[in-house]
Image (cartoon, rainbow, N blue to C red; front, top):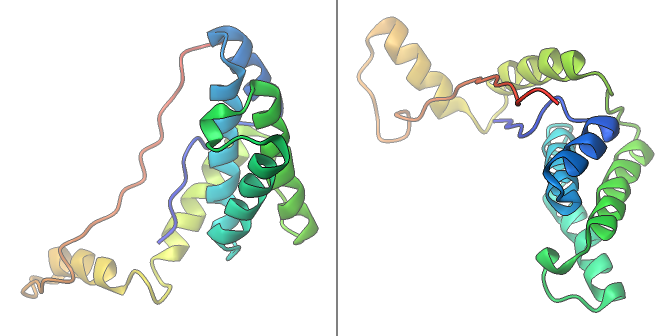
Length: 149
């Protein structure tokens, strides 16, 4: 089932957030996380993203991602975005488009092979069928807002 973190972020919002909290690493890492969630919903593999981060760590001689500067994390996020675009996947820039599309992606993901136990759990609540150990999970779509910038 698809999961999205930080939907609504784009490069302009990420820049403002980094300046506002005086932590560009934090802002760009959050944008990177959104891009990774977005891209994995289109069947790109997590290993593809891990390879980008590993490459940056190796090139800069940094053992952990947390060691990147804010500028380096920005480059990692932009490399993620470029990988996605090269795979033919568009990343919308508008926060409202993110909201609508992420909700649609989550709902559509309920019909993929992975979430069948979750769909069965939903069906149990609708039909009263007894639960099994595999259908007790649930899902949610929880839009939140950030503090105004």
